Amino acid sequence: MTKADIVAKISEKLGMEKGDVQATVETFMEEVKSSLESGDNVYLRGFGSFVVKTRAEKTGRNISKNTTIKIPAHNIPAFKPARVFVDGVKTNVEVRE
Image (cartoon, rainbow, N blue to C red; front, side, top):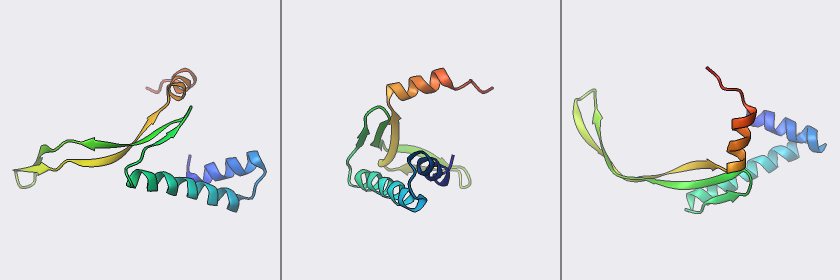
């Protein structure tokens, strides 16, 4: 599902103009991004949490030059789904092989 698909579904369900829904979805995503960039987590009860995770410094390899490199500690955005969300996917989605 793409952002356009989400906008179309919301527009259809609520009877709103696609342009209004598009602006709302874009604003929501910008707010989540802005919050994470400023170090604040976003909690959406029943859906999940957008959080900032810290990765520790580690040693890696540059295989083309056969050298060891240090990868510095850094932060990354992550999503942690709510338990009810996880349980819904577990029970409703068929296992793919």
